Image 1: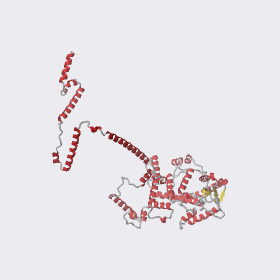
Image 2: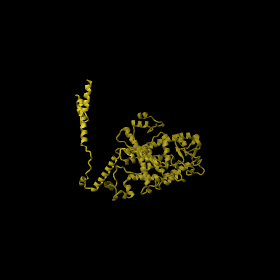
Image 3: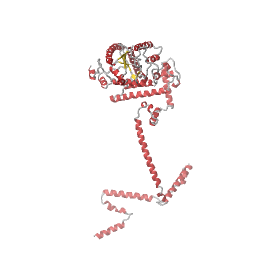
Image 4: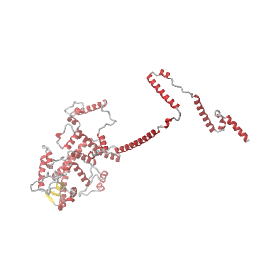
Length: 567
């Protein structure tokens, strides 16, 4: 039985070759549907391969260039294509006809390895450039504003900061802005100019017929652009200290750029605070600290701010003149023990014990501290009473005024901080910018080296100023008081200050009656004091808890928020 089976198998193997293996379908299927599907797919693929082999010619047909010469009219292009094709085919035929292991394939691998090494080093250098670029982008993202960079602190080797400021100091237009030289933009500028000129000619007695703004004299430019005129005039007065009649026709370009830097600094502080308020309250609109409300005019708000500052300055000047606290440099007037201790700490009194305190009369609500700097008093070791003159101008050392407006500003902010009085950051920035402009005058920003403060102030007042006689009379009385100044020993400082407290209380009550009466009379006609804000309830409690305002009772004690809201 086994021999018969072996003979049948040999017969099947001899009868089946590679050409008729399709006959094995009988054994492959066996009635299984899945096996039949795979078998049919195999035969289909085999037939496709067979058809491709049979249809492929042994010799490749070459291009019929005569046919293409009839179709292509540009013979020069055809000849170029033909020569390129012929040379390429010759190169391929030559490469295929050579033996498989050509001798030149075994040579030149050193160059390949060297190229790989060079490429690897280039890749490392590229990775380092990418890493440094990422660091530079991170630093650039966290750079401070341009107005915070002090160019006086640069080093010559600090090329990064030099490049940073040079980049941001140069003006570059945004890519989305219109082309200023395009016809449409020029026409839009002309139309806007005509509209402005029409509006201006409606309200003036001297109509203007010029075409463009740059054709106008400066007075006509400022007549239209009143806001720019106010900014430039204010900057000129603060920067130079001269009379307004000396205002230049064309401001210096450095002044204009400085104005833009200050405007950007003020804008940065106000917008950051506005953004914080909007995010906390989730409000659609929130005014800036010094800006207008949603339906207010910016000019009116600025005018109210200026009028408020003017009224406050007049009240402050009146109090200083009435108590001989104005133009007393280098003397420092004080009213309480805290002010006295603050001035003594600034003068390092605990080290030399030579600071002196004077009184100009029993009716004067101040004591006057004479600082002792660098071992020598600013006006001499004692007040000279023999010749009847207190030579304020013959200071032997640098007084506080000679240190510049910025020193005075930082001293004021330090004193307010120690007094637990909060200052609005926007207003503090505004005041700081004004002091920076005055600081640009140099060391003689207020007086000459051989000049005292009183004479410098009188020299700067216009001869036709109606208040000049009053100031001259005040200076005369002040010098008479200084001639009769009495030095107070250290043991009587506290007693003298307690006596001043009673005098100041009486003055405060009298001034409150006068100022209160003026305010009530103004309120009767429906006017509002510029800069005054009424708060109550939860908002008042929040301001007290966040130390934005401090409320004290009649005795000077600080009041609690809950007690104040209940009352």
